[in-house]
Image (cartoon, rainbow, N blue to C red):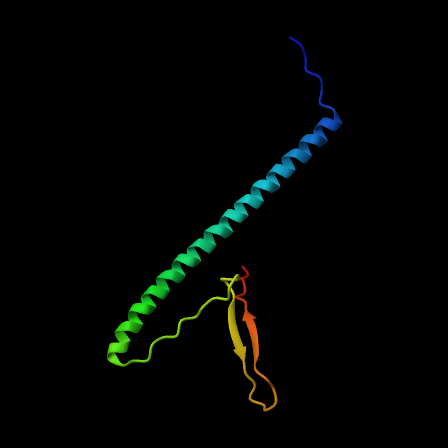
Length: 106
């Protein structure tokens, strides 16, 4: 039997870089899949809420109850909500801002 040659330093650094880049690619892919799954669940839940709100509003119109106003997400950003800031002081115009939800810190 022949004893294999010990690996050279160029070979080791090449494989280290290769393994690290593949690991980072897989982590990024996993993160992207998780984000896409969360977006799909948000859209599905939003559709269910809109459907149930519509049914309730139709029933409430028969009972002469004021219907619920549905909140529509800002186009292109389903996780952002638009809010209006009004001042009690005269002369200050109302401002329109995008409200972002904060991530919890463990």
